[in-house]
Length: 289
Length: 86
Image 1 (cartoon, one colour):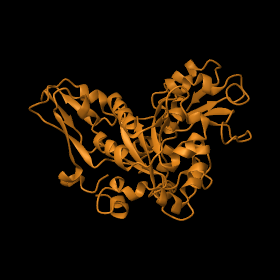
Image 2 (cartoon, helix red, strand yellow):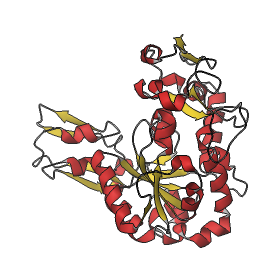
Image 3 (cartoon, chains in turn orange, brown):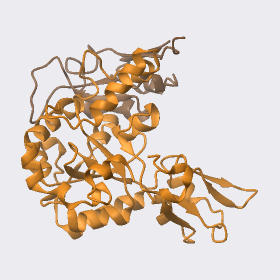
Image 4 (tube, helix red, strand yellow):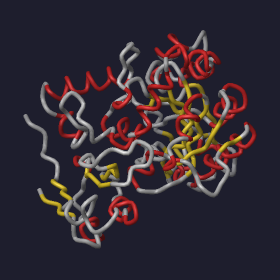
């Protein structure tokens, strides 16, 4: 169990705690104001100077001696900030975790506060110039995004009921997109994204620069050697390069240190050979997110 | 002691961007050709900010340390606005 479950999980996983989805919590935190400021110029988050430094060439800056360490420390502090005066334009307190499809369905079916909308993905828009409706937002955030026309799909229905939202997340999972649930800002939860590497801003910072914008899921994939037919379909679906087809063994092996536990590979498998097991089952992975 | 310098990728904003001949939102070829996705499309910081529906956009190469210098963006740019150097 991670620190955030301890703090905001009420004895379970943080994203399974209904309180974190409630409008009352959002109002108490004044989340509306934060979200409005954050979303109206979200594309500027890497361009804007934060304490005099932009994200341009962040990879180089983070490797600098001393300065790099200070930079990493302050970036992590910003990402996980629970302070009173969080700055929305640098997305203070905005981070998430990878979840398997089943848990995403539970959230959309029961926990998410209405209204639920599906808008154009911010990350794909800023990194690829592509408008693809695959971000499911709910609660107060829906009302904020609805007022920004560049994120609202024109020809399709964007306000979803719970069943439609579940159908959409299943569709995204089939494409190989990874479901992630987001604090925005911590502890208020208002989004389930369907992320793709390397377009996703969160996964970019996590995988390429080691900043904890996205935590690994509570599970890891396990391959059943008797069932695996070495077709390699799952390998093509993995966004994290955690699966490898080993011809000499005639099966797929999992690099559990790379696995984020999204379970996308599992649905791609025709032979039902992949299972998700709790991360805690592996002593080496306990507490490693 | 110091890390390896990243490649320099520059975009000529007199050709592409808010003052250029093309709206980067309509082209976006460099964004899509780049495998490591080092470019970011964003509203132009030099123009009056329209919080609801920004009209002026530009592209900035942000994740320079991930650039492989494959030169695909240089070739694909219809305006010849991108240069990549060490």
